[in-house]
Amino acid sequence: MKIPENLNNLSLELKNAKRKAFSISVIRLILFFAVISLLIIGLTDKKLFLLLLFPSIAVFIWLILQFNYYTDLQAYIKELQLMEEEKHKRTGRELNGFDPGTEFLDKKHPFCNDLDLFGPHSLFQLINHTVSISGRKLLANSMKKQINQATAIDNYHAIEELKGKNSFLKNFEAIGRAFIKAEKNKTSFYQWLNKNEKWAKGYYFLLVMGPIGGILILFASLFGLMHASWIGLWILAGLSFLSIIHKDLHQASLIWPNEGDIKTFKIWSDLLEKESFKSKNLQPLHLPFHKGTLSKGLKSLEQVSFLIQNRFNLVYLVFNLLFWLDYFLLWQLKKWKKEYGNDISDIEGVFDQWQVLVSLASFSEEVQLKGEIIWEKDAVIHAKNLHHPLISPEKSIGNDFLLEKTQKTVLLTGSNMSGKTTFMRTVGINMVLVNLGLRPFAEKFICGPFQLYTSMRNADSLGESVSSFYAELARIRQVLEAAENGIPVFYLMDEILKGTNTTDRIMGSEALIRQLSATSAKGIISTHDIELSNLENILAYLVNFSFHSKIDDREIIFDYKLKAGPCPSFNAHKLMELMGIRFQ
Image (cartoon, rainbow, N blue to C red):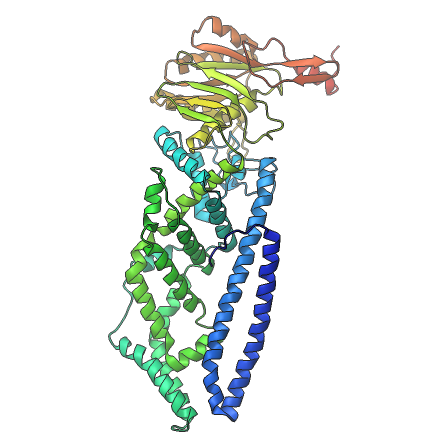
């Protein structure tokens, strides 16, 4: 399929494509009955009418190709329309119905479960524009990778360059969505590419003899030079010879990629051939498409695939029995594998990488990310007007945050529902975004060479006989082991040690803060224990921040703004009153 240019009115273009496809289907049906009529008349009365069969069948095949084109065009336009609808939903953070990627959740992972990377209303739903199973998996794995400044910088330049190619991004995604449907595992196909195709020397004789002999016997019978029974004998001979290679072609058909996958790869290859790229990350990925060899190989693969997928089509069966077309098909397979097999064997992995980069660039363009990211060698974090990407822009409230080189622990206090947990997730999820090569949801985000670890959403597990308190201790142990092994950890710990009594919690929290300070680890710890805020007077590396609330009659008002210093008041007493608990 060739992608049309200037599709301005998608609804009108879709209507026109449907009309043309319908017209072609009607003409094709009429032609089909005409061919049957020609066949009957030619066999019973006027044999010269049989000569019209060949041009009629050629026209019939052309009509099939035209019908397929307009059917594909309809699928492509429908996906463009759906993408526009999804863009509006993502912009408004209406993420229900998008793929949640739940299977990528991993409770042992250092941070992915705590930061809403996967699951309902997750970052994966917001940024995922991949279309294949392997591309989707590669994106998820990229989201779960630990922070690597060098890779993030390379990805950033690639994404920024891709953002300026809006037409390419739309076409790349829409084509994949339109044609990659029921995917088929291609492992056996790639293994087949590395095997030599069986081809005996005698096959060349049969390859030539089939068409020549079939044509001679057919014409001789038509003009009375030979009895028609010879056609039957020729077909019987053909069945014997065709059975020799039937098994090889049948095995190839079983492992052959789906038609939609091949079609998608071919069109993607055409799209990439027309583009040029400057960034360090994109040039190696674009290299296979420079000379057009890959596109030719995929076009040839598409043609061979058409024959393989239609071997049991009635028209092919008739021509195969007459002209032994299977030998031509096997020769085409052998020739194609020799010329293009090596180029094709790694192409799916290359396209997966393109899918991830296109997905990230499409997301960045979709939400108009403009924030500045600065990677520092020093262990600092500085954010200006930092927002959470999963909160609707109309409702999101930005905050400034600074963790200086000399500071190690931020103690975050605040009343219930004031925004402590959301703020910590905001910091963490923006670290994930910039590590992917995206701009932050902030005016500016400065980040040092950290590795991210969290302990926030710790739940009990009946199946594993694990309490939530034990689960939290296991997460803290993971942080401590990483920090004590010299890893530059940035940690986010929410409501630390909440599963034990106040005395033990305060003692344990102070001990943990001191233990972490002996390493290169830095991070944020939230707590309801205001007593811990006094540590700022003792520990020079600890700093207090807080979120406040205001109680107005029967309403608690939050401004969700981060403030320096400990929280001066809490609202648990008032919340309990509002829920009906009476204090004597």
